[in-house]
Image (cartoon, rainbow, N blue to C red):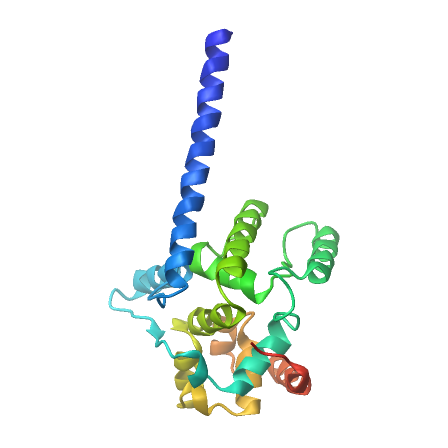
Length: 231
């Protein structure tokens, strides 16, 4: 029994060690990307593998642009649609999380997430699209790193450059080119609101650009953009 107890202790210590090393690895990347623009993300890598399973020559559409070269209309539209409290919270919208928990309890599964922009960025940079409570815990840890090591402006700049906006389309510049043949700086209010409305389900809206639901969402976002506060 004593021998078994020692092995259990060693295994537990080993698991804790692996967990701590993993967190230090993540911490290092968060520090690095605070100054250096990420060339790719975990989410991009997953989507590229999916595309190359069908076409070995497939490439992602992405082009980094600095914060000041992204339309203020798109910034306001994203804040209005995804995270109205972004500039004020510390990474988590507790009211939104409570509503998401209530929805999940009614549905009996993990469906709604109540994620802020910071949480979405944490997921996109390092995690998979799979929904689980374990992934949400890891997402929360990374979110705390981002909020404590980066400014709100940096979080938003990276977010706007790496989020998915269509089938193989990532970032504001690629999205503006893909949908409107414009640069991200040239987007007008309605174009920005429509792009913001696509964020929760970008590949669906890429295939169904005239979906009635997207038109309704665009109108709602347009109405909220005037009160959106951006970093």
